[in-house]
Length: 202
Image (cartoon, rainbow, N blue to C red):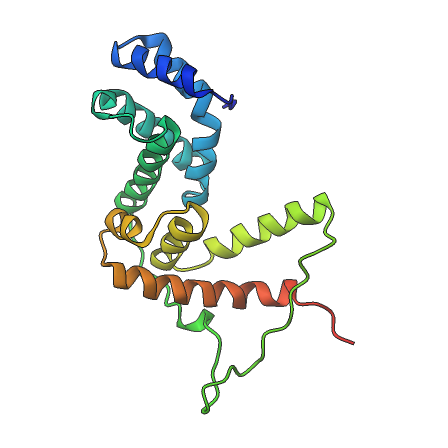
């Protein structure tokens, strides 16, 4: 799907046409926001067909409920929330497997409370475009290797930018559980990335 930027006045006109039930307005909505929303769905659903199904479900849901959109936020922000919810619903309805424990991915601690292996500095500067693309791919693959419950919290908070309350509402867990899972997910992600990103030591 191609993505085309849309200005605020154009967005308002599009919203009016959507509320009027204009079919071409729906097509324009998909054309304008489809690419960005598909990228969001892919972060939760690495299987392409699942991601596309979630986006299709989200756009249909948005079209049916457009009269309830009050315009207090940007249309793209509203769509983003619907797509995230559709992706999470897709995850809930597929066949569930016993969730992997995150314990094996967490850093080890000594009796005095310090890490068994001190964290090394990461190389973060001087990357060319190819290295940056490779790094993004590595981070996403590492995120997807986390247990689902922790992965979704990390995606919602650190990638999609939702706050704790919003993430808790979407995941149907307590804000305290969101904070705990996020902390542990960040620790596990660092452990997964550490061998690839540590700076060479003399």
